[in-house]
Length: 147
Image (cartoon, rainbow, N blue to C red; front, side, top):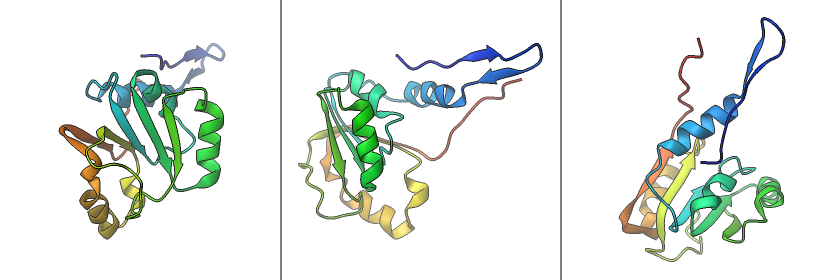
């Protein structure tokens, strides 16, 4: 796993902890093996997870409904040739994803931004997922105490 985090002493009494790196390590450690598989990243944002997912996935669709953030994601992770960047709403019935073509659906924090009805619609549309694989949603960061 390429993600890492830093513990850096700023001075004799101040320790800097890279919580984003810690979160990445923790979240990615929870995923099932997806090497060479098709992954759909819902709510990909600026790409905090996209680059890490792209390193192992056979194909990755990074999807977000905000054009500016998906463009930022592409500027950071566009060098990965196995990534397709999509600006679309996850609740749209018009998503162009082939049924049964996805091995893993990954999202971090997406559900907290959706209404109950939008979550129901999303689940109904998850026919993209191959029947032998799974969905992995994380509702929040789960960080251990640091002292």
